[in-house]
Length: 450
Ligand SMILES: Nc1ncnc2c1ncn2[C@@H]1O[C@H](COP(=O)(O)OP(=O)(O)OP(=O)(O)O)[C@@H](O)[C@H]1O
Ligand SMILES: [Mg+2]
Image (cartoon, rainbow, N blue to C red; front, side, top):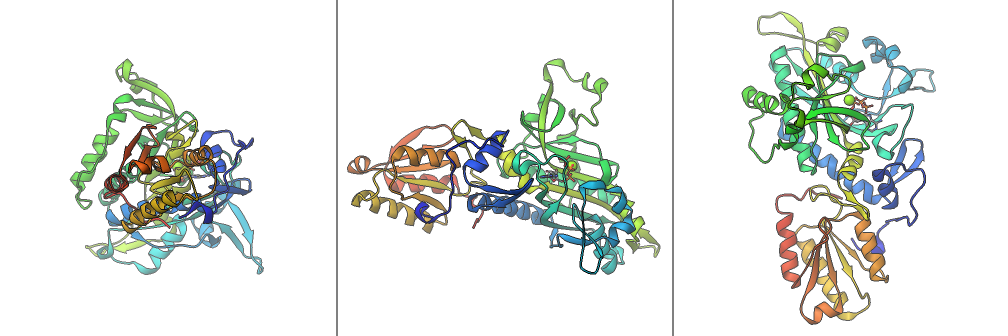
C-alpha cells in the first residue's frame, strides 16, 4: 500500500473523550470512528488488524479440531424464552420488534441458537465429540460503554460450543480450549493468564478467564508471580490426547491466579510473600464447562452406546476479538504511539522516502516495495511529499514494528536504514540486506491480511 492512496485519517490532537491510551491511539491512528456510544466503524487500519486477529483465532480453533460456522446477529426471542434467559438476561439485551410484532433480539451470545441447531440434527453419540464455533458481532447494551473497543456495546467475539457424551469428554474439551487459547494469545504477542473465575449468568461449575495484565484493566487480580514465567511456546500438542491437554491445564492453572470474584485470602497467603501480586487485568477470553444446563432445558439429547437417551454435556468458550486490539495496545506502546507485535501488525514494515521526487530515492523505494511485496509481505510506503519528521511521527504512531528509511545521502553509500520501532535502534545496510532481514523476521509468522 502507498500512503498517498490509502485512507489513514490520523488526528493531530488528542481526543478528549479517550481516557486510556489504547482508545487514544486507536482514534489518533485513524483505526476507528465512533458512531454511537460503544458502536464503532472500523476504518481501514483498524479493520486490517481486526481481520488479522480473526484469522489467528480461526487458525488456532481449526488446529484444535473445532468447526467454523456462522450464526446471525439477530435472533428470534423464542429460543431464549425456552431456555429461560429471555427474562433473566436483563437490560443488557437489546430487544427489537419486527414488523409482524415478533420479539427479536440482537444476540449477546449464542448458547440457545447453537443448542437448537444441535438438537435439530444430531441424535447419536457417534457424532460426538463436536465443537462448533463462529466469530460474529455481538450486542450488549452495557451500562457504561467506555475505553473504546474495550467495552463496546457492539463487539466482535469468537464463541465456541462443545457437545460431548460424558462429563469427562466435556472437561477434555475445556482443557483443549485452554491450550488453544494459550497458543492464540501468544501468537498475538500477548501474555494472557488463565485465572479461576466466577461463572456469572451463563451458569456452570468450571470457568477460567484469560487476563492480560494492565493498569487500565477493569478486573482486580491476585496471583503468584511465578505464573508470569509460564510460556506455551512452540511445543507440539496432540489435541485429541486427554493426558496432554490435562497436563497443560495443570501446568497453567495450579499456581494461584484468581480474579476478585473468586479470590481467597487464606489460600493466597500460602503463596510466598515475595511472589504475591495484586494487580489489574483485561479479560480477553473465558472458558466454561456448564454440563447439561442448556441441553436439559432445551432437549439436546443423544442416544448413547447403551441405547439410553441422555442430555449432552456442554461448554462455551469466548474470545473478545475486538477487545484484543485495545488489550494489545495497552500492553505494547510508548509515548509516541502503538508498537504492534509482529504477529498482528497491519503492515509488516514501513518505507519512508526522505526526499520524495528525488529520482534515485523514488526508484530505490519502488524497488524495495516490489521486492517485499514479491516475498508475500505487506509494506506501507510513505510516498507523500511531506517533511521527514511528519513521516516518522506517523509511522511511530501507527506502530509498524520495522521501518526502512531511504534518502539520497544513504543511497550514495549504497545503504538504507532499518529501524526497530520497539528499541528505536537503527542500522545502515544495503537494501537487499534489509529485505532479507525483514523476510527473516516474518518467516513463519505472516498471517494474510487484507
Ligand atoms: N462489552 C464488551 N466489549 C468488548 N468485548 C467484550 C465485551 N463483553 C465481553 N467481551 C469479550 O468477550 C469475551 C467473552 O464474553 P463473556 O461473556 O465472557 O464476557 P463478560 O465476562 O461478560 O465480559 P465482562 O466481564 O468484561 O463484561 C470476554 O472475555 C471479553 O473479552
Ligand atoms: Mg467473561
